[in-house]
Amino acid sequence: MADLGHNPLVTAEWLAEHLADPGLVVIDASWHMPADGRDARAEYAAGHIPGAVFFDIDAIADHATELPHMLPAAPAFATAVRRMGVEPGSTVVVYDSVGVFSAPRVWWSFRAMGHDAVYVLDGGLRAWADEGHPVEGGWHDAPHGEFKAHARPELLADLEQVRRTLGGDVQLVDARSALRFRGEAPEPRPGLREGHMPGALNVPWASVTTPEGHLATPAKLYEAFEAGGVDLSGPIVTTCGSGITASLLALCLARLGRWDVAVYDGSWSEWGARTDTPVATGP
Image 1 (cartoon, rainbow, N blue to C red):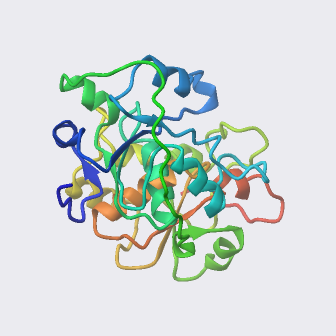
Image 2: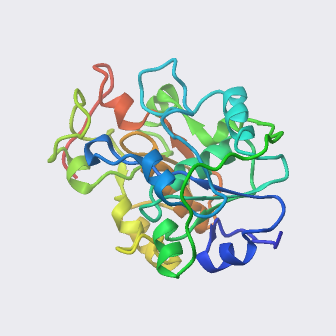
């Protein structure tokens, strides 16, 4: 496998050239908001990158909590990805059907489980198809792998850790839209308060992607984080609605050389549902 350096992204051209390489595992990590009315599993079966396996973000999760798609324990994660054919030495490329949206969640999950050789397909399935590469239908089952998880707790933030950051040096960076962040738009999930964690900064996920579904250029990423008031040299925890686009911000920060960013897994689905967590509105 070619050395990809420290770029967490691969291009459709690169993937097409390496699709048959030994040790490469391609994962479709498409996921959609429930209100979108889309079925990611059915869409995978209708057409995916040849040889890709499907990662169900809602199914491969901690089911001991009612919070959506929380990261499972290391043994459960390892069992799930072994069934996808992932080995300790595999190079994993993750993509989604939107472009760069839900794939970073699985990218971050692999990193949180100790696997560094994981990359996101820039532009996702859209870029792959737009460049004329083939897709296949049906369901792909891979030979069983021997993946071993080694959890990295420093990449995962929980409720109590986030509580302790309030008013401190750690920057909470929220990927939700500006309207949701300011409490001027309703949350898509019922039962959640509107607003944000006091002191949080806002870098909307739409500001770090292009209309075509690619990650923005490094220069544009710097601009987006600067506009959000983020000090890229300081400690950062990302958050969002349910941990999906928080992972996208973590990917953006890795693209800028910050591989040490933690994701608040519960995000607003947890914080906004409680009555003992402070909430701010406005900018």
